Amino acid sequence: MAGLREHPYVQFNFLIDIGAGGSGPHGGFQECSSIGMDQTVAKYDRAGEKPVNIQKLTRINKSTDVTLKRGVISARAFEDWLEQSRGGAVRTITITLQGEHHETVQTWKLLRARIIKQVSGPFNAKATDVAIEELTIAYERLEME
Image (cartoon, rainbow, N blue to C red; front, side):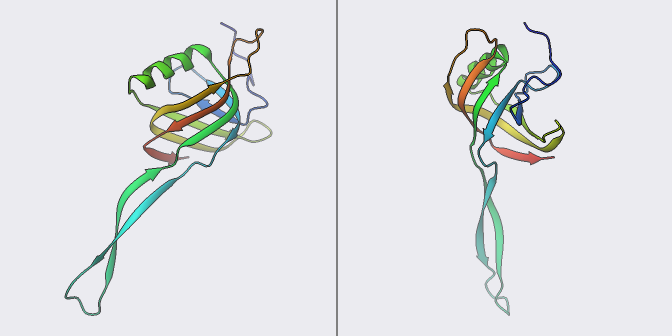
């Protein structure tokens, strides 16, 4: 296994920690789709109240799927995560947006996350990382730091 470099994913502004332990990010991607959540609201008419007030109640929270594009990721950690996702296991995934001087700009934590789509390529025989064209992650809850 190659040694840790100071900035191993320089051209990749979206770093990903796949919750596999160890220090530092497990990979980096050049592009990230929108990350967000959606809440549905139910209207409840409180009958008999004067004046008539309609109360809005929060119902279902839905999280958008996140798609990361054009990246590299640690082969062993990714293989383990992919195998666990196939078995139904979930993880907490951290995506960090880095600025041009490698400072953290924004961090998103995707709780109870799993891989739902993975497209590999292009490949380079000289590299030890896994090249990923597209990685789509479904998650149940979003936390931002």
